[in-house]
Image 1 (tube, chains in turn cyan, red):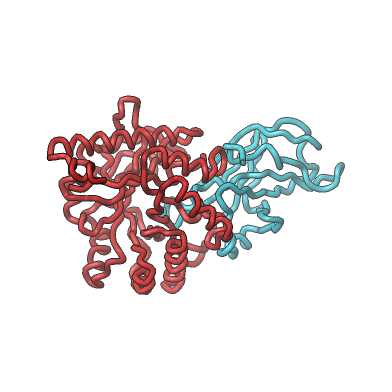
Image 2 (image 1 turned 135 degrees about the vertical axis):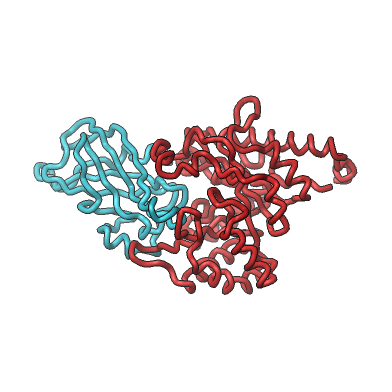
Amino acid sequence: MLERSHIQSTGFRNVGPEGARTGFEVRIRQANYRSSRLSLIEGVDIIVDGVTYPAEGNLFRLGGKEYTRDELNEATQTRLYVGDYFTVVVPKQGGLTRGVHLVGSAIRYRHPYFPPEFQPAIARNERHATIIQA
Amino acid sequence: MTGFKYGVSLYSYTDDFGTVMTLDDAFDHVADTGSTGIEILGETSVPLYPEPPVSWIDDWFAKLERYRLEPTNLACWVDTRIQIDRRMSEEEGAAQIAQDLRLAHRLGFKFIRPKFGVMDRELTPDPIWEGAIERSLDLAHQLDVVILPEIHAPTPIRHPVTEGYVAFIERTGTKHFGLMIDTGIFQDRPLDAWGGGDFEAIKKGAPEMVYGTKVPVEHLADVIQYVPFIQAKFHNIDEALHDHQIPWERIVPMLKKLGYAGYLSSEYEGRRDPWVAIEQVRRQHALLRTLEEEYDAAHGAPLAETADA
């Protein structure tokens, strides 16, 4: 089972070759109470130690497939289930340093049954998480 | 005189389900309240919705038998605002409802609750609702599953949305479309928490959701003939079995007086700390049963029926 926080401890890691990291990634559980068509997710902002990495520049990975924001909008028949997680891939030259970071996430959900002015609705979370390998 | 049927919606266990609670655990908690019915959310509880594995379906029926529960309502959604720049067509809406009717039938449910996308703050449903539902009535009849849109805060009973649904029932004469009442419409005191959201932001942006719609319980009489199922929404019941927002002491006698004999399906929507919902649901069942027994005692208890059972 998954941790209660949206952001999971496991899966927080740098990506790209050691010494030439291209970014990092964060594992996040489905934070909605029902499964979401990927087209209802308008991207995920990540915040690390006060620096915001906006959804527009991040990739969304589910089941081994990566999606840009435009590709999420096309994925009307693919679902993120409750009890499952996705990964946000954040480009950042050099990656993150080894150690504990304050990590935040803001998932932009579109809930069609909410009035238009409340969309997207933002599901936020913040916690400490640890990078083991710089 | 007949009594209520008691059930629980697994919506109550939001955030627990998938982190600290399995479907087996949920069945155990529901059954131990003395409920006879279980309500689920298709997209939440059914793995690989809308096509669950056959092994899961076998296990679903085994669980129903083991815990002596019957499936009540399958909650589902018509995601009209399906893409940022595009809304669903009537055909797509009807296809979504057909899919959920078939899944409900396959899993033994009597009702589906499609939640349509809305156009405004009063929750006016996307205009495709009427055509999409009308195209679905034959299938609903064939499968004998009743389609129930939800009358949900801040939409009251005396409102064009509710009246539009009633006009549809009267125009078509269908027995396979009705109203589901969410008891959140009777909320008459403010919420003190919000399940999973930023409470201060909601207070500011949508005060009507915090301070209550305050529908008079007498208005139930207008529509009760079309209401076969009630979601017993609540937010906080304390150690003295006092509900801080929902006036059950007025709702229960009115439902009894109107002869309502359908389900009260618990829908807890309060603090989302782990496992809180399990205890909150139990308190609601204790409270509702107390009020029903008090009404029965004052109006001639259905003792003969109890003795026969």
